[in-house]
Length: 350
Image 1 (cartoon, rainbow, N blue to C red):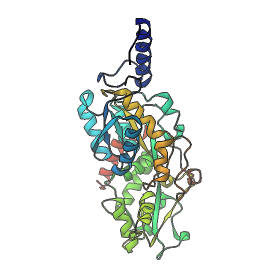
Image 2 (image 1 turned 180 degrees about the horizontal axis):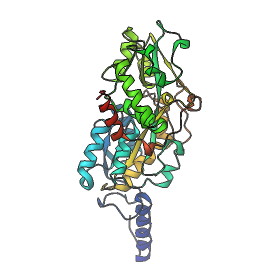
Image 3 (image 1 turned 30 degrees about the vertical axis):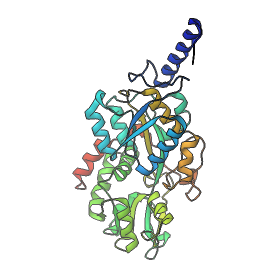
Image 4 (image 1 turned 90 degrees about the vertical axis):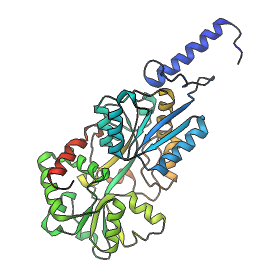
């Protein structure tokens, strides 16, 4: 585009600078490739992704198609990625960090490595799905459920609370995947809701009562096969299997504790922009996109069966509506992964 005079050039330069300030909360990113000639973010970003790769790829493909911004994904699990970011510090090549659960986000936040999320992005997500600090935002959610073998149990035989799984009558009858970030997020919520003493007692009883499996899908498969009566997992493993062959879930049905019980915990998947980002404008644009209408519709219409939480997009029709889950209120910024790891290690679960 040809600029005819110096005054017009000054106006264009000022507008571009203002856009950079808005996108990253102050200053322009060091990369120098964050704005196209029309003032929109451009270039490329790197996302450290601990969310399901297939879901994030759907987001990335839609975002790149709309903006032209190239996204490189580096895949790992919650704790692996958060530890890597902390180790890399200000030298991290990551622009954005996405997780399945909140504790890994809090770990990076506590290390002081997140930039503030743009206010217009935060405004797209209800406060209950983001930390009180505003250093990152919720991007999706998953509900804790007890899946049980319906050929062996009826609903009236199930525990009224997740805490009841510590009772002697449940010895050897239920399963979980204690080494996974999913289960550790559930324990983080228990710690926040009931305190350290109650959490210690429950974990000790869990060591005696439960059977450990590696992965939520494996635990559900064990329930389906009748190896155990029930398993504490997230809801979407059931719905995802049902949408395929159902071979690992046809004998299973999910039970929702509700009543603001710790077992009704709604875990928030998080997204944040790193202070070290070389293209903060594009990184902020990506976060805004996935919490916006188009990004959340990927959740509503796709096969991840995670809950849409932003931009007033309803959940997938097959899911219990969030308002009916009666989930407890938990500030995601207070979920403590290190304390949980210590308590679970002391209980002999890790």
